[in-house]
Amino acid sequence: MSIEKKFLKAKPVCKVKFSLSGDQYKSATSILLVGDFNNWQLGETPIKKSKTGVWSVSLDLETGKEYQYRYLVDGTNWENDSDADKYIPSGLGSENSVLAL
Image (cartoon, rainbow, N blue to C red; front, side, top):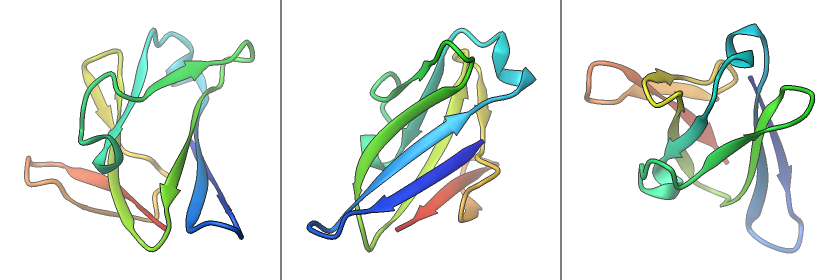
């Protein structure tokens, strides 16, 4: 997993690229990015798989905020991001990844 942040000078926006790779994702058929930025709506932010097997998606997010999120792999497995800035309790018996911009 990796997160790339590119802060734009002209706007209070950060281009964030979320990427997942590795053996555990090779056989995945779908991965969704779900979080505050899409109101936790399933299917709102699908992650695309490249020819090299890396799953990624980029979002423009407002700076000065923190965003909670998780990955949903194959519609059943919720995963946190190992590169998250921090983790906080979700209130559902697990933790959410947090991205601080």
